Length: 318
Image (cartoon, rainbow, N blue to C red; front, side, top):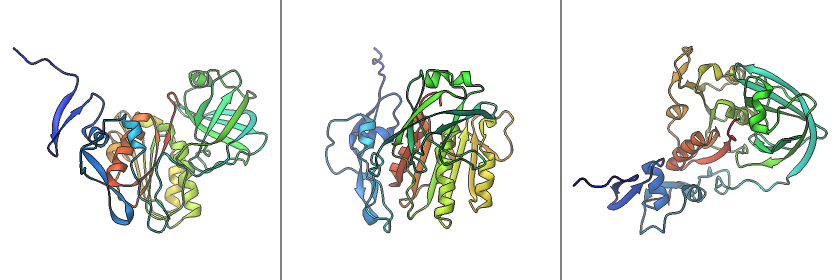
């Protein structure tokens, strides 16, 4: 009689039986169960090694991820964890939608002008609520050419017309729509310091990554930057003016990737962008922005290398 099938598979790691649920990788499950555990490495670095004892009862993977230690460069002070961010005062501002323009066939730029400047750093997020709509957490950025006024908040969003943003905001934004902004929020803030800066952006996740990359070129012009940008369709790689500016200022390691081969330019590599993330080092600071699956995949790579990791997640539809 055939054995009953199961939705989970089993394998043996370090002499311990490991059961992997659908949707989890074996690495993620081993981390969550403690079969492999963070160990202290150079300068207090968190390295993946073999666990020294029996693991506690498995917790949800997202809860366990927040516990992974992340390396601080030896000259940059104590180590940081991705679940933490510098303590800052959250402020509220009011304003209105100033303009909505298309910057690619399926990408829009939304500009909100505030009555007073909201103090945010590159990589920060804010909660934006349009009149008649729902709150949405987004990363302010710059125009792809690099411009923004002091009291402006610029956002890159998926859509062909303002009506396409209804699902995201709960209303269709038009110039003059009242807006409320609250921030800074999030854990992806740019932190000057030692080590290579590895920036990973999926589609409109480039918004927060662009803000970080541009700031880093001014604040730390000698710091090594490695940028990986991807999209499902090559037509959605809207950020070429920004990439040209980065190349002109000395950033040579820029990789573009797209899943679909249709109309793929020669400089765009095939496949998901996570396949093109460079081999990470313990001294790297990794910022990733995009959908949950992309951010989660980069997080696992950073954890395996003991690198610092700072996520800038996108809400569904952004």
